[in-house]
Length: 273
Image (cartoon, rainbow, N blue to C red):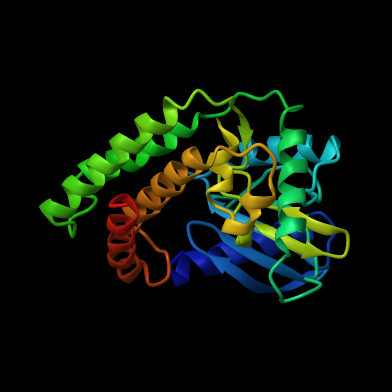
């Protein structure tokens, strides 16, 4: 979010917390992209704030709450409700103090993801298919107005790569289930009660390899029953998607254009093998 929007979003979060009887005088920005993640103090509650016009807060809340109820390794809501204020939607979560600054060991990561997937098989909710996310990237690449800095050569390469890999993953024949969508290290918290997943707005249906593509390489080596050929394709299509998003003229990812250039080069190397 731009500075003015971030300020308004912060005030909306503080006001919402106060209306619930929480003592919230200050907010520390933990993450700022398409939505704002804040640590409200002194109540020590985490707030996620998104523009009301571009949000999936209820979807994320429904999935997180059901996963929490079946004992999955997920962060808890406080309370499980979506609040609307000043053109923003706010959800409040338990704040977990990190117990370490070190990377979560691959064995613990793989175990947490396996438990998450087991819990997700018990959740019955209508969710997008992983190919819907690929379609969003394809639409972006095809839109010259939204991706004006993409050269014709790079646009054709990205479009062709997304189409080919989408077909390859779709035709794999692997079982599909509810997935996190982006279980990368930034969405797994090291807490006193063990690793906990956050950020469920990207949940979708697909093969487990699509989730494993977002995790460190060693995690997949410890996860049972992985199709490593499919995992390779999932890693490539994931790289193609995040590369496409960095070329969106409205992308607010820090240093996004440089990463878009770098990831295009990485994608060419990955798909040339």
